[in-house]
Amino acid sequence: MRSFLLLYASLCVLSAAPCFADSGKQPARPVHQQSKDLTAAQITGTYEAGQWGTLDIAALPGEVRVHLIALVGLNRPSGPNIGEVDTVLLLDKNMAVYAPPDGEGRLILRFASGYVEITQIGASWDVGFGMGVNAGGRYKKTSSKNPHLGPAPKPDSEG
Image 1: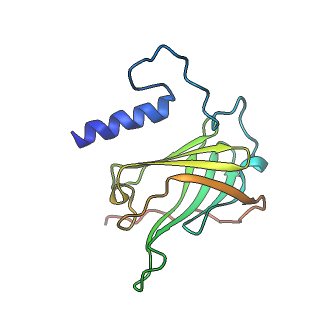
Image 2: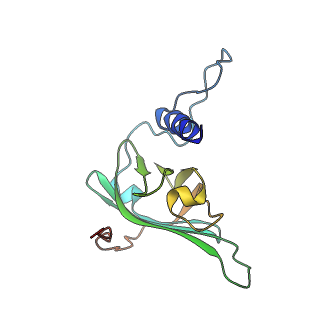
């Protein structure tokens, strides 16, 4: 059942179509949908979501180099739980999707002028994060400078 709900939610988010009973009204166009693709300069930069999230993006042709850090429990004596993504994702129509190699969850990044909206599908462990970490939310662009992330780390070999 959990897999079905995850698949259903993913399809709803990715299709941008209403997934619930039709009320007879046309759905409002979501703010994050752009009429045209953003340029690399518009996407590249550093984004923040308060104290709990930092997102560095370097746009490449058809891809984005992503480094995301999300935190929960900043004021705990033992320190916060952390979620981190450091990878390259395909970019299509101002959207990129992260699927962890060993999890069932997804992070959907929607790029708009001046911000990135991240939707987290699944629990923290489904996307490889520490307990209770949720990267979902709006990340406001704080710098347009290239964060110079370098190459993405290679996945660990299972040998």
